[in-house]
Length: 253
Figure 1: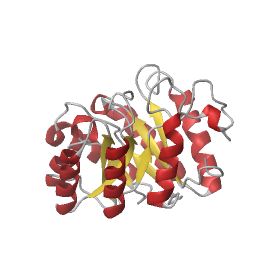
Figure 2 (figure 1 turned 45 degrees about the vertical axis):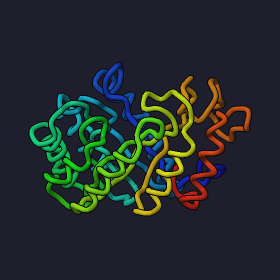
Figure 3 (figure 1 turned 90 degrees about the horizontal axis):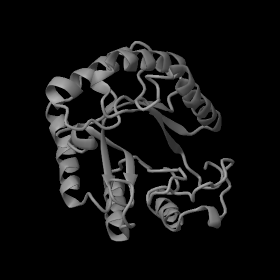
Figure 4 (figure 1 turned 180 degrees about the horizontal axis):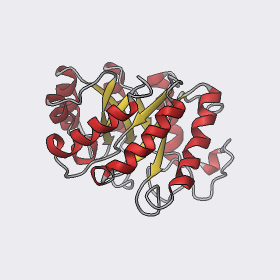
């Protein structure tokens, strides 16, 4: 990805439920550290993502994980910590915000690196979060979009949040429908890319995977070694990659 696609940011989603960290903490942590170590060596930004819809139920485990990760990697300014991937129906003021606050305080024992907090309804209600932000410096709020499902009304929420003084980080976006399938919405993707460029919002596209879904960049059984020929890539991945270069100068992936 760094050599061929010229990325400078990689998001590492760590599974938490369904056989993930809650059941196999050492195995999942090893998977994350292998990728983070290489990202540091290559000099790119890397996001350590607690990829969970129910993190408010797993606060003890999350704090345990981020205490170790921030202690280990806090000295590297290119390592970011995404503390909650996508809350769903949890309440911001009484559930999500207190959880994020606890993790922020844990991480701040070791580093001032960027922290990214998830927001309500699959990380879309950034406007609500901006009214009662987490206490602390260098904290951003997650906005996720999928071009076929999320349009101008979500960009309005983002503008409102930024007008209220908080930073936005789009740690996940897709060209297709929110469930990962559907068709590629080229026109709406273009509008989103222009929006990110206008407001200097960093982003990570979903996803470098070979699942049988529209948002996966690779064909099933694509090589795990990279250097993917066109035959191993989904049709839209080349255009998405080209769009990233056009709008971000190849700085995000």
